[in-house]
Amino acid sequence: MNNYDQQPRTTVNTEVGLNSFMTKMFGWMAAAVLVSAVTAYLMIPMASQAQGLHGAGLWLPIIVWFILPFVISGQSMKRPTVALVGLFVYAVITGGVISTYAMVFSINTMAAAFVSSAAVFVTMAGIGAFTKKDLTKIGTQATGALIGLIVAMIVNMFLRMPLASLILSFAAVIIFSALTAWDTQRMQKMYLQYGDQVSTTGLAVNGALQLYLDFVNLFLQLLQIFGIFGGNND
Image (spheres, rainbow, N blue to C red):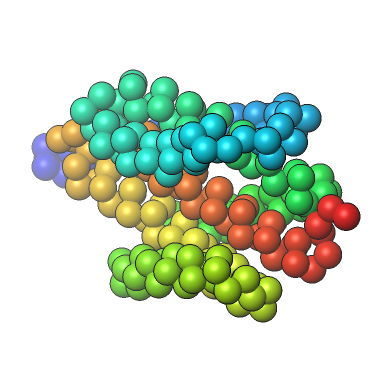
């Protein structure tokens, strides 16, 4: 009798723990997105000053922006609280970077890209959370495609081909949509496999960071697409 009594209880406890973990992870991710959005809005009036930056004043923030996610990810399991603070610091920096896009794109275009990104993200995260299909293969393929995409984007920075930019942006949206679903499912599996062995807070911070990066990249690529179709500032 005891074995039969314990099995449902274990299942319920696992589901409750997983739901709590996912709520925490998406809550922190959403909070980071909100911090970036508010920061970008508040810094738009100062964005024009970035045009006058040269040398270290221009490149240092960009270098920090690229490196900080690796630092946060590396600290997430060792010092979760430090990593969580780092996530919101990174969200502020990202908001500052995004504010500079207001010099190129209209506010309406940026708002449309944000809403569209949110819709795509919620849809793909929902698929990742509830699908019974293993998305590992799709995630691996998307990661490989992302590497090729980065190389192609770097090459196009020198070629400056508008059509290529449009195609690459559409490809990026597809890739980051797939990564959103995969990252969501992957974090679920990691919690179920390692949740009793590692800091669940650290795991949630790591997941929030990955999903935040997926969202930001979706937004930036959709912004490029909307801009190409007439959303640039004159």
